[in-house]
Each structure stands twice: as structure tokens, then as C-alpha cells.
Image (cartoon, rainbow, N blue to C red; front, side):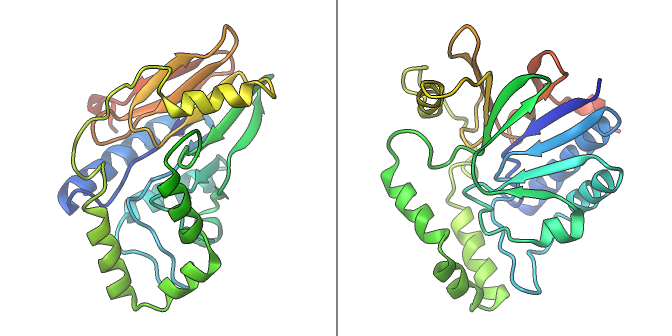
Amino acid sequence: MKKIYFASDFHLGVPDEQSSRAREARIVNWLESIKTDAREIYLMGDIFDFWFEYKRVIPKGFIRLQGKLAEIADAGITIHFFTGNHDMWMFDYFEKELGVTIHRHPITKTFDGKQFYLAHGDGLGPGDTSYKILKRIFASKLCQWLFARLHPNFGIWIAEKWSKNSRIASGKKEQFLGEENEWLAIYAKEILANQPIDYFIFGHRHLPLDIALTEESRYINLGEWIHFNSYAVWDGKVLELKYFKEDHAF
């Protein structure tokens, strides 16, 4: 049976061009290794540390990843892309040029009789009020229109300066807070109170996690690709958190 793959938080573009290019090559190798048995691929947000599509301009670079995604999509494998807090200004370029389906909000899917709840994870759960307000501003059509008025050289320069201060650019590993304090686990339990979900899959947390919420339900966080190279795979019966090893590269 063909498999479904989930990965998140590549954060291409930081902390510097050299390490980002090496990470991009690693991700392309991973995609090459899974394309023969994948039925769908879900990229769960923050693939880029910054992304903004002007009407006729996109950020320079990342062409190897884009080429591999186009190749996989052209082969008939469905690719889904969730916008994260770092690449929420993705519009229609990936859909039109690469054949990738874009998701901006959480979705539920049924795979082989199991219910999956899928989201990047930013802005969900309790707390983080200041970010939730900021996200509403950044997601507004007015904010996007105003930023698009900036020349790309200037606009992308501002964004890159902002990215240098992000938590992933600092190189620090996240720490497990305990199940009772993990806000996405709390959010998942709130959803469970109203609908049955077998698997919650999120990114954003930057820490690979596999937490049993009930006897029937699990929360998986996909981690990130600076420290962990982590991803999840559903084979039709089992959902497993895995780690890509460089010696598997093609």
C-alpha cells in the first residue's frame, strides 16, 4: 500500500545561505527517497523562513526544492502545503506553477478509515495572545497590499532581517514542557471533546513529539529539519515518527 508522508518546519533561508542550501539538498534527497511509495505528501508549514509573492516576483533561491516538488506532482502524487506563520504570504504561485494544493486553515481528512486533524499549529490553543493579534494583522488583505507596494529588494531585505531574530535562527532546541503544558496537546484535547480524531498532526512546535491523548487518539508533532530531520509516515495501518538519515540520500 502506498504511504502518506508529513513534514514541517524546514525554515529554508536561515540561519545563513550555506547551511540553508545544505538543508535544502537534504530535503530534496528525502523527497527523492519517498517518491516511489508516496500516495500523498503533506508539507505542514514554515517550509520557508520567509515567503512573499509579489504579482510577478518570488523570493530568490530554493529552486531545487521547487523543481523536485514539480517533478513529484507531475508524476501524479498529490502534494499539500499548509501555510505557517513564516510563509503565510504564499498565494497562488505553488498552485499554478507546481501543482501543489495550498491550505490556510486546519483540515480533517480520512485515511484508511482513520480520522486525521492536520494543521501547522500557530495560533492554536491557549495563550500567545500577542501573536494571535499579529497574525490577524499579517493575514489582512490591507497589510498584504501595503507590503506589496514595497520594492522587492527592500521588502525581502526587511523580511530577512526579521528572520534573523526568529527562534529557529538562534539554533536553540526546544524543550518539552510536559503534556499538561503543551498548548497543542491542550488544543487537541479540546477538539476531542467535540469530535473523534484518531491522529492530530502539527508542526510549529519544533520538537518531535508522540503523545497518547486517549487510548484511541494521538498527537504527533513533526519537529524541524535543522536539528532533527523528522517526519511522520502513515502506511495504512500505523502512523510512525521517523528521522531521515544522510546515508539514505540518493
